[in-house]
Image (cartoon, rainbow, N blue to C red; front, side):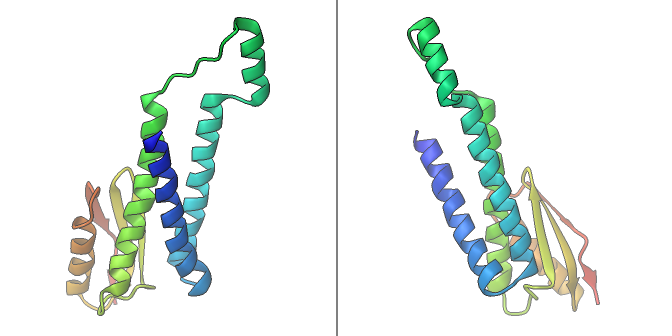
Amino acid sequence: MKIIFGLVVGLAIAAGVVWFYADKRGDPNAIEAKEKVENLAKDAKNAIQDKLGTPDQIRDEFVKTGKVIRRKTQEAGAAIADATADARITTAIKAKILVAPDLPALGISVNTTAGRVTLSGSVATPDLVSKAMQIALDTDGVQEVISTIQVK
């Protein structure tokens, strides 16, 4: 139960940060992240609903067997945890890039899948590519960083 509560709180915090940057600032990267967080929240809700069943399914099971049994599955929990971890990683990296004075927050896009971070966009110098990669590598949960950032 603590894990589910933690996941819900994590999604809510990530959604709040993304909402602020997407709706208040119109940042296209934040808008993309907002859509990802919304999709992850829907996926998490669907996974939980699939695991528990509908009220009709629960009622039918109770009528048929006299009890309702649900077991935890590691795969469902891991899938939800991975999805929220990716959203958390993306949000953390974007926040770090945003506060870095010399990195263009709107010029760098961040995408995370299974701990693998992909940075794209453009910056003014190769040093800024290195700095963006270092920020990503220094973020908890990051397994690998791939940069396709162009120097312009």
